[in-house]
Image (cartoon, rainbow, N blue to C red; front, side):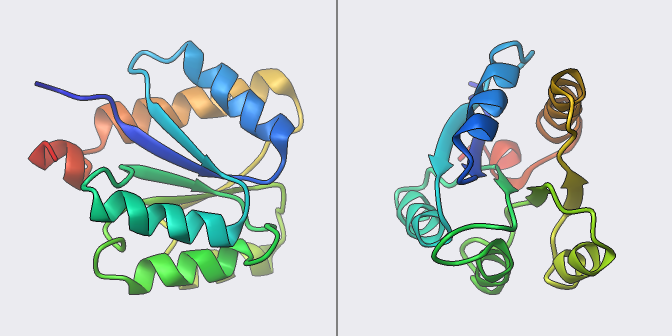
Length: 145
């Protein structure tokens, strides 16, 4: 039996969370969505989900987060043997070259700047969903866990 992909959105902006939720409503393969509003909650959530064998298949990570910023979260994920296989897509408003380079040096799987227009935002989310949940072979979806 094929299950829905699990997506963790790490985002402190409630408006952006609502846009992601709205965009995914129209998805061809609906996702199980979990939201963490800061970096500490993200790491706690990931460890809890991994311990219960329900880790996300994909993480959408903002860089500018309260309590623990996205760079720290990314570094912690990629250093954890139970989490480092999960693709992390940095999804942030920054287009600064130093942020892009920093994210990739910390082993982000992708860096995406949030579009300013709603239709572009929805289009980008549709592209993410298409590629990462239907075309790419993700470890947990491949093994069925």
